[in-house]
Image 1 (cartoon, one colour):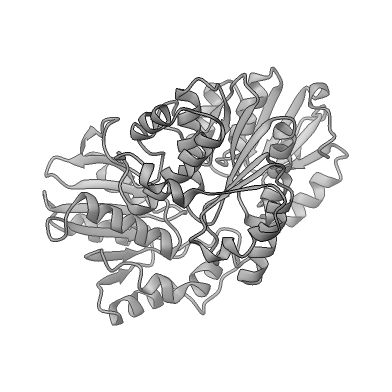
Image 2: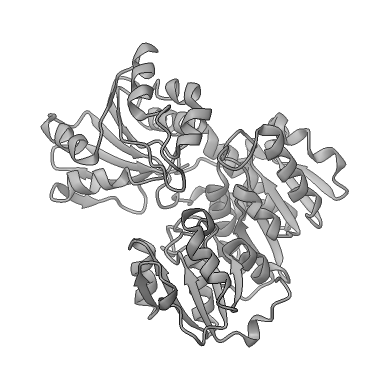
Length: 449
């Protein structure tokens, strides 16, 4: 379907339009003058923003919502798993259909595409590269899996040949993109609801590398990547060699310094002046839901929200907080919602040891998303093992009980509160601090991951 002529498409219906990636494509199509309509099961920040652009969005998932004169249906890759019956009905409509990853491949195929992938850090690296290119007047287009601080959007539409995209490995989605430059941050075991094991994940990345046209930029210190790049016929660039060139960042943590090294490597191969790239990078303020400082209560409690949902990401975020706030100067309370039964089970040992830098972990019920109930794993069982490992954790059976518990605690200037996870943990902060937040964090506040 990558041969589909988008210039002949006039009306597009997006199923799952509120997703962070698919919403960016919907925005792009509106800017190209196409009529865009969509649906999603729930409302969120993305659907609110899209409605402001004039896009009509339906709540729910019914075939009847799709106009009979639609030329194209773009759907989230989650749809076939969430609702296979609905997906079968979609296919029977006789309308051209593309997944979001296929659509991403279509809009980037004739561009100088820089695709950023990896188990961790791809959102931040994508945003860093985007900022450098924008600040140095390269006028790129950008699609990122978060909201950029400067534009408060997940989409930038530029006029140059450069297109920077975040390329997700889930269900081999990134194989729809054939970039000129691939940036690979790291490879770890994840998404085991789809992949069989680490070897299966590496096979997918190997294929991604093989279809990259010119250059692979990677971290040679990550053995899981280094094993794959030897057969690549193009140019290899080791971004770990740029670490000593990373300026002092506004975003904390060693992981963000490595992210910065990847961005500087891209700037270098594109011929961007090193001083200009470093100056831009020093002004990078992070992205939405990546250790994002949300505010401060009148009693001095500081609130963060973070997307971390893998043990490595949790450790990195907590290390970054400890870098900002020296040990023993603050009490860190984490509200964590595990994401998926399969991930929690496969990485259970890692999760049980990931919260060493936290003083208290509040665990919410597992966000099961696309999966069926699995009673062999639970937040309660995870809390038990965290406590056996010498840390403090409490599991709650629903959000309301967790909120009541937190409201009963006395907080003050020594407290840091972090909602963490890829699901809905952030809603706790909204419930708890709805009437207590007395200021919004300034654009210069530290944030990251």
